[in-house]
Each structure stands twice: as C-alpha cells, then as structure tokens.
Length: 114
Image (cartoon, rainbow, N blue to C red; front, side, top):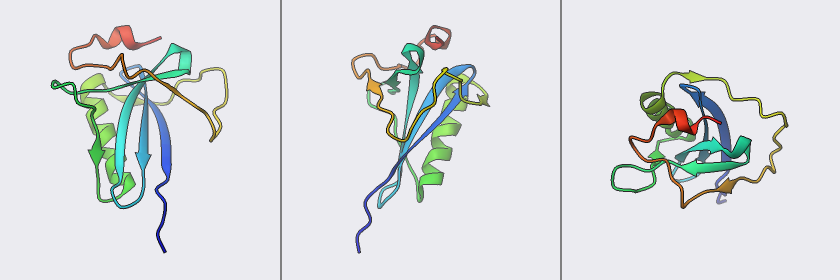
C-alpha cells in the first residue's frame, strides 16, 4: 500500500520575523521555509545566494523541520511563538505565495516584520 505525502504547516517567529515552514512526509520528507507577510495572508519563499529556493530534506519530516528551524534561527534570530493574526487558521487555510518577491540573503529582516 502506497502512502500519499501529507503537508504540515508550522508557524513561528525568528528574531521577531513571522515564518512558516511547510513540511511534507513520504519518501522524501522536505521542509520549505517562508516569511509571512501581508498581515498573515501571504508568504514569501526564502532563496539562497544563487536565487534557488531553500529546502531541507531529512530522514523523517521532524528531521527536515528541525533543519529548517536551525536555518531560520541562524538567519533571523531566536525562535519564538507564532504571531497572533487576529484570526484562527484552519487546516484549509490558503496562502498567497509571492514567488516574484522572495526573501534573499542580506535582506533587512526588520523590513519583513509587518
């Protein structure tokens, strides 16, 4: 029996910067970090110096998530609780992904905080 991958969204702040990590389960557990903007309605992907989307692969989804968390702590600062956006998120929450506006290394993270 083949299992379908499941996507898990985890929200945190890192140095005050609101972030989302989307983690998948399955044969290739992967985590993708984003910065949350637009008062909690849109997310911006993180890219490396070459402009490639940052992703973390692990032996399990928890391992991939931990790698993403370690990266975000190094990039933005200490992990904290998720922001309260004034609305509850459901499992069916849809994000607007701003692919044309990624977060690049060297971006001033103070400008990323809503």
